[in-house]
Image (tube, rainbow, N blue to C red; front, side, top):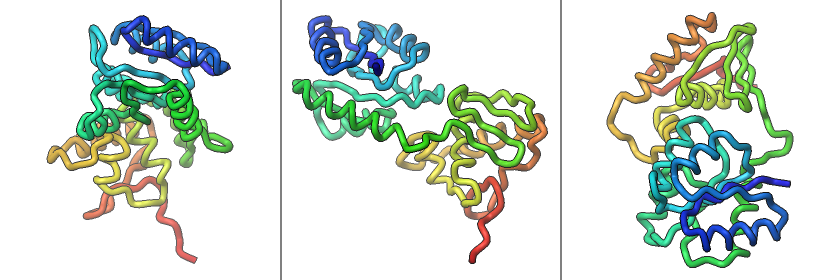
Length: 229
């Protein structure tokens, strides 16, 4: 049975959602505040999260941003009475997988939850990435080189994961901004340079050496460039 976390401060609405999900075969936990919702989202193992925008203690988008900053990729469907295009874009850019406006019908919410869970699963889902002696455990969010643990911050892990997933390819700054920081625009800062520098230092201290290569004028690459046939 899949577990769903419903973060909703309106008790009547939360009970309505929970009952509909339970009738559909889900186990449901409910959180009525932002801080409790974030705590459960970080500690629990959920197939998906239903997240209200307006919450006491911490608004939904702040909660979502903090959740994503830890590397947690649990599918999230945001619920909100804020239905304008601008608000929906804000929700998606904060890291949501879908955005449902209130009022809504339960069958639609169920269908969207099923869809985001399908997108989050692939046949033979990868749980580890390997590049030479470098190994990334995607479930435990841990990195090791030749068996030695390398401590990375969540954003550094996401950066390395993105590069290794695209090993052999040149990864541009625009790709990193969108794939690691969820930015669909250039903020005009040196955020990438700072994080790449920190990542390289930690990898070097862990024995991984110059695994993240700079491709001058283009971006970065992990691994050798594929040889054309």
